[in-house]
Length: 150
Image 1: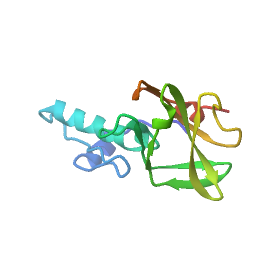
Image 2: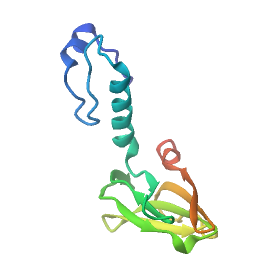
Image 3: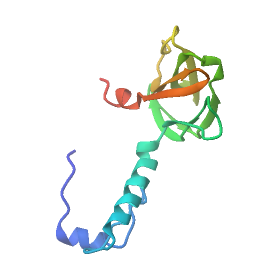
């Protein structure tokens, strides 16, 4: 189903409200400073569904990652993932492959080394995290590969 353009009346009815899922505010015409609204909107969008299951560095650690909460469907089973912090020090000078899988009806996180690669069973790729000299040097987001696979 294509995204439909809003009519002027529909736009007017949204002004001053917030999108129920992203929290983005529908601003009035002529809002100033518009820049502040735009930055808040982009931040909320990035932290909402686009941020689901995002893998990011933990500020207080050189080798820990935070996997953001999210909801996925794997082999027809819908899983709600609460998020978690994972320590990757054991993957120093290697790449860790981070994925989520169905663990008997609950979400499980799989972390495997470069030599092992991605799991064989049904899973959703989240990220590849490279650790060099005891510090996370790169996080490659792989979530979109799963979304667009056929």
